[in-house]
Amino acid sequence: MKLQDIHSPADIKGLELPELETLASDIRSALLEKLSRHGGHIGPNLGMVEMSIALHYVFDLPTDKIIYDVSHQSYVHKMLTGRMDAFINPDDYDNVTGFTNPHESPTDIFTIGHTSTGVSLAGGLAKARDLKGGRENIIAVVGDGSLSGGEAFEGLDYAATLDSNFIIVVNDNDMSIAENHGGLYQNLKALRESDGTASCNFFKSMGLDYRYVAYGNDLKSLIEVFNEVKDINHPIVVHIATQKGKGYAPAEADKERFHFGGPFDIATGNPLSVSETKDYGTLTAEYLLKMMENDPTVVAITAGTPGVIGFTPDRRQRAGKQFVDVGIAEQEAVALAAGIAKGGGKPYFGVVSSFVQRAYDQLSQDMSINGTPAVIGIFYGTICGMNDVTHLGWFDIALISNIPGVVYLAPTCMEEYFAMLDWAMNQNQYPVALRVPGTKVVETGKEFPKDYSDLNAYAVGRRGSDVAIIAAGNFYGLGEQVADGLKSEGIDATLINPRFLSGIDRQLLMELEADHRLVITLEDGVLDGGFGEKIARFYGTSTMNVQCYGIRKEFVDGYDYASVLEDNHLTSPQIVREVMSMLRK
Image (cartoon, rainbow, N blue to C red; front, side, top):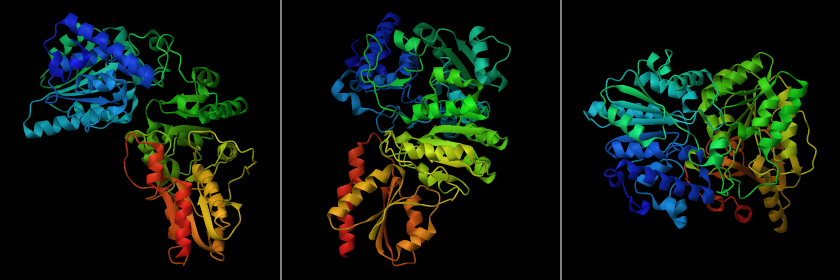
């Protein structure tokens, strides 16, 4: 069967096993071709080819429902459910997202980009089905370290209480993004090594039925087990051992690098584009490693994403016990950091902006209320970072800056980031978060103070009158452009680096009232609840005109950076025109 002839799972149901095996080979080749040109999640999907075919061969979508956790492993599912063109025609490569998306197909039940939620979501579907008297199969597919997240445990805990059909497929490739960490994975290893017969069985201990499949890339074995559990009348875990990167030698050999990546040469596996520029992850890792050499209490923490903070395998080895990967469990990472700080250690937890929201309770309760001086680095907190709807870096300012007691710093460049980091790591009074400046390293050659204990003291970069530009973090460069643009219009504006996102410099703001008519704020994040609103609220009863610039509160998927910036009036020419118009009123 030709791939272009597959429009739904019904098209493969009449195939014999040899034909399905040929189909798997063709799909894997098509995946490799697209991924080598376009990039994406490589290893997870190559390892899921046979399992995805078997699931769609046995079950009846969209009546039966499959929930993929984290859903970056759903490429083959998309190929078999009406979206083949997006994987075999280069002109159509961008017509689908990298995660399940209900707007694309009724077989995608949820938009999922964060991990450990699949079992809970599927458990909810199973409960709703039972309440309505339905009989369809509900399948949760969990893989790539998802079990290390606390919600996965909670989902399994609830699943065991159901007395109806619920199938939990554990795709066990012995990997997360990097290697797995945590006691649970010792049990998975024991189950793999005993062909599923180990007396200690995490899933059975929770009251769940259990099946084990040793050859998870063998279609015959998969079809047999799925036929066995189809329409089962109780919850069951089907534990399947697969190979991440299956069928592509470079991905099999280097599973971490090929978890996700940009375009690459199929023959060698080498990336087609190698950046020679610095990145904040690498710079942060080297900074922390140097601190570790002189201070045994320094510890770097990641929640399953060591590459974000530059801790490659060799750097993890150098750090030894001073590097901790808690698995995909941001709540654990924040609480652990709080405990380390309380005990006299110096923790640095590096996390992606969109992931830190998973640990709001720990930020508030464990870290802030207790005043533990942990340090958290927020990466990709920017409009111009990740553009998947599940990974937007717009909301961290509103989230973190409004928690009492947290000092949220916004460095404008590399030098200011490390000046602030020096202070944060060596003080013991406050929980500190640093909004690592965007995705591109900006070097200014300037020296910055290394003491930020005078909280909320803003820095004036240029002193003028009439207009004050308060440009936070990543947008300080935009503030400079706006100031230059206003200068050409005859306005000598004041330019301010607020440095602190979590508070306001009341003295400076009051001084501006003497010779300024307009204050504008620039922030690389959502306006609602953001930094600018703090400034506007301060001037609320005064005659000062305040205009806040940022991004409106919305979810956008797969957006073009330039279009979003222009749509939100975040380009220098737009702002200059609007400022001049406001001054004329």
